[in-house]
Image (cartoon, rainbow, N blue to C red; front, side):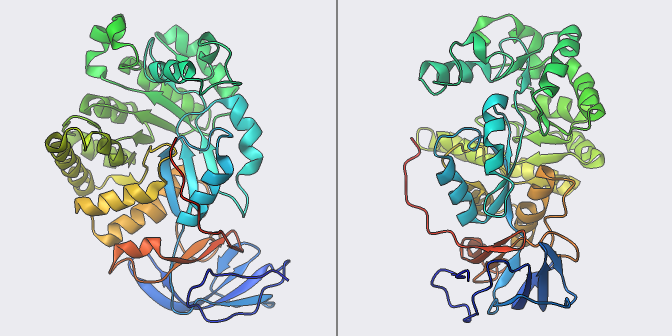
Length: 420
C-alpha cells in the first residue's frame, strides 16, 4: 500500500491508494476552466484526465475544496543541464509545482546521459536546445570561457577550444550555416536556439575584440536559420538584447523570443513589431528577474529599467502577443520568483498571470502535448492550492497536492541551500 501524504494540510482523510492504482476519483475540487473555478468531480484514468466516471475506480482522493490548476512551467533556465545538484534541483521544481522546464542551452554529451532522469511521473519534463548558434566571438562565448577558467567545466571540456561546436556554434556566413547546421542536428536538440545581440551594430562589433561576447549572429542569416529549423521539424528561439534584435527575430519568423529586450538598459519595443509578433504567433518569454541583478548597486536605474519592462509588457499584452514565464535565474530560483515579480509589476491581472504560467509556458515548452489545461483527454497533471489565486495570487505557493501523469507526488520540503 502506498501512503498518500498531503503534507500536514487540512485535506479530508482518504484511504491510501494501492501502489498499482491507475484510476482515481477526485472529489470536492474546484477546477480551473480558464476563467474561474468550477466545483466538479474529475477522474484520472491511466494518466489521462476525464470528467466521465470510469467503470473501475482504484482509489478516491478528497480535494477538500482545494483550487485545482494545471502545473506551472519554467520557459527559460539552464539549471538542469548538468549533474551538479541535479536531484536537489528536480526536487525544488516539483515542490514549487513547476513540472515543465525549457533549458535554453546545454552540452549534448552531458544532456544525453541525464535524459533518463527526466520525463517521468516522479520528475520534471525537460527540453534542451543544446549548442546555441551565434556569430564569431558572440554570446555566450565569453561566458563559456569564463566558466572554464573558474573550473566549472572540469571533466566536461579539457580546453577552451573543445567547447566550440558543443557549448556554442559559430556562424559567420551562409556557408558556415550550411556546414554547421547538420552538426547541430546531430546533437539531437529539442529546439534550436540562436543569439541576436546588438544586431543594429553587427558590422561595428563583428571584428572588434572589445565586443567579445557582446554580439551575436548576423541578422541577415536569421531567416535562413529559421527556415532550416522548421524544415527539420524544430521550433526556434531567438535570444534578444535590444529592440532591434526583437525586430529582426520577429521578421525572421521565429517561434519564440527569449528575454524582453533591455535587461539592463531601457529598450522600447516598437508597436508594429509587437503587432507583427502577435500576427505570427510568436511567444515572448519574460525573464524580467534578470534585471534584479542591478537593483542593489543602481536602485534608481533599476526602477527605470523595470518601468520600461512594464511598458513593453503592456504593449505586448495589448497587441495580443502570447507571453510565457521564464526566469533565466540559473540555480537561484524556479519560475516562482519570476511570476511573483511580474505580479508586483502590476501589469497583469491574476487571471492573466495564471494563464501565462500554467497554459502559455507549458505549451511553448511542449507544444505537441495535451498539457496546460484541465479538460477532457489532457494529461492528468495538476496542483491543488489552498486558496483562490485569482483573489490572492500568493496562493500559488500554497500547494496542497501535486499530481503528475496520473500519480500523486510526495515531496518533502526542500532544505535551504546557497546558490554557490
